Amino acid sequence: MSSFRMQTESSATEYIIVSAPNRAGKEFLSLLREKGENFLAITNNKYGKKRLEAMGVDQILMVNTEDDRTWGAPDIRVGEVYLFELSFNLCCRYIQICKKWNPRSIHVITKRGNTRVAYRGLGANQLTYINNNEVEFLLT
Image 1 (cartoon, rainbow, N blue to C red):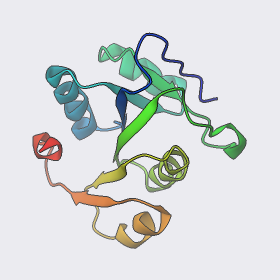
Image 2: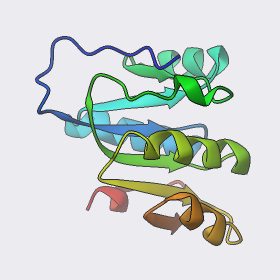
Image 3: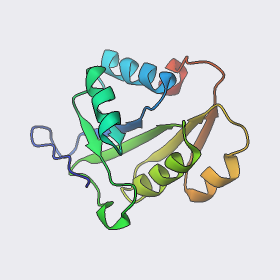
Image 4: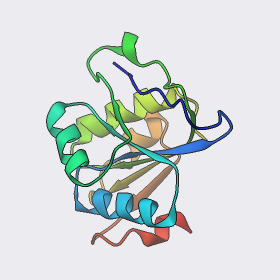
């Protein structure tokens, strides 16, 4: 169900992929928009898509997290992946999906301290623990 097709951008343009199911993720999407970064938001359901659209995000990548046969890479060049954790299981699934797209790195941003080994084992390159919703430091 990876149905996003980018037709107007050069194939050399890298996109940041973001899963933003919480307030910190929303703040990060706003920051990317302010900085003029190329990004796609990723979600696996219609509710998530509607929520992203209500935030003004118009480039949304819908994925079917239940069928690994549909996890083909989108027709874009994937750079960094930022996964804001709300659900441990969903975050693990997104790591598995995005890893197949050969990103430069996968970042998991979490408020939990006990998930490090699982995320690293699945292929996350960086884990960041936050206590608030300030995310500007992620782009430095």
